[in-house]
Length: 322
Image 1 (cartoon, rainbow, N blue to C red):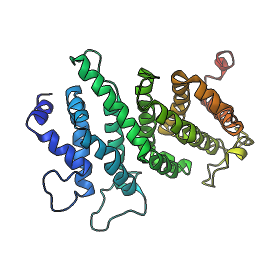
Image 2 (cartoon, rainbow, N blue to C red; image 1 turned 180 degrees about the vertical axis):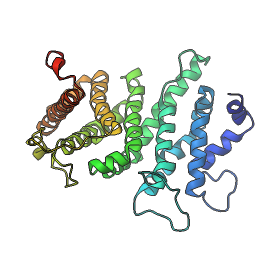
Image 3 (cartoon, rainbow, N blue to C red; image 1 turned 90 degrees about the vertical axis):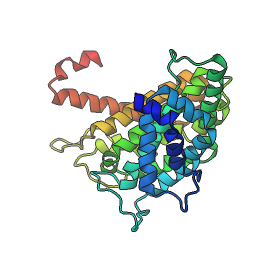
Image 4 (cartoon, rainbow, N blue to C red; image 1 turned 60 degrees about the vertical axis):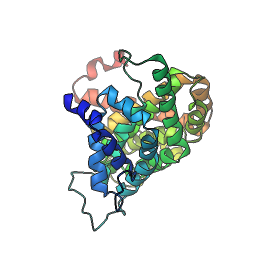
């Protein structure tokens, strides 16, 4: 903890934040390499474990803006399969693309930490705490209006195009879902007064809750199919007609823990949206396709849970507990 405090007081935190955000604060002759930017982001993430360091970062609004716009756009671009830079080999990884692992998940975790409320016991003056709440809400607004969340949603949908891909990129998908939950926190604290409330609610409405229920439903539909082929997923309309049980003698694909975690979080996110704005959730459920999709998601999740109980020898008591 002493070292993390020293990083702030000696100016290292400022240098790291400008490097991660790609801000030319030191007169660099060229933009930082992706690997350097990723290392700076991971160092910032470690430093942000201390609430006082998060306060320091939030107060440097130009740095936070750089992280939410330039760095996020660069991280998404670097994580694309066709974005390999021959002049800068990416580190070998198991299951995920190098740029994806090095920068994007760490950046999403850092943004989530900056949006999360400070601990109640932290000694912060009332006016400073109010200013920090405003800065957190402004960060949510910036992520939406800059197009960062839209590009991130599209990127995660591509990374989860098949169950095998979703399994390989489980760490990224988990951080994406965790960030979505964090984006709701400023609105949850002050539903009427948060400056980001109207912008973020409109984004939820227009994106069908950031496309997360569709992504989770498609993964579970594929997991319910016999043989676990990598055929293209069915459309949402066709998904509702897919039976959840494979024919006798045909094994279904077992989704990994990361995929199941994303699917559970998708349902929790809907509950979180409902606790923040029940009319918004009711309005989304009025859409026939979204409602059918949600019912199918719940059906597949329950069927998967029942199947796990049977394989684990817990089928005898499952009927009464359901």
